[in-house]
Amino acid sequence: MAKNVIIVVDLDKTLIDFDSFRILTLRNIYKFRVLYLLLLRKLRIISSFKFKKQIMTYLINRNGKEYFNQFADELTEKININILGKITNIKSTNDLIVVLSASPQLYVSIIAKNMGWIGYGSTFSGIDENNQDRHLYGNEKLNFLLNNYPLNLYKYKYGISDSFSDLKMLSYFDNYELIKTK
Image (tube, rainbow, N blue to C red):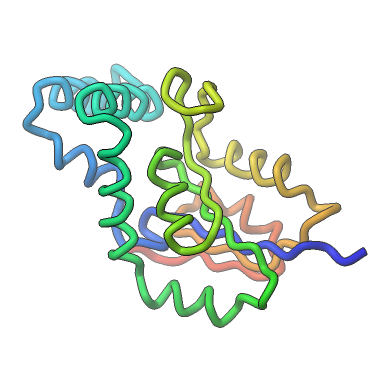
């Protein structure tokens, strides 16, 4: 039986040229709660994951989940055409393209869907449908990939990321690129 072929793409500073969560935070920087959480994060009082979870909880309570549809649509318009070109050149007809990101699932999945792909990001209990905390970063990203797209069923064709934290995951692919960021 032939294996399904998978291509994995990182979002931030790869598929788009910037950190999407940073942009989301900066857009809301003048809200006291966001500024307070940012201060806690800068002082390293809270972890990156806890910071993301609290920002997302605040923004959902304030703006609703619909807010992230518009944000995802705006990010989709900012896709790096050079990276998209690489993926298009490498992709064969039935290849599955998956976006894996430490950014929130709430908008990563929409961006991927806008591209005709599948997307997974970090999830937060009380926010996401799976109701669990999952920080798709480093080894957790690799574990997610192996659990959801096992090597006995999938051929890992191509992976691309900007982050050294993804290097172990990328090493599972026949071909991969660890790109430099600006």
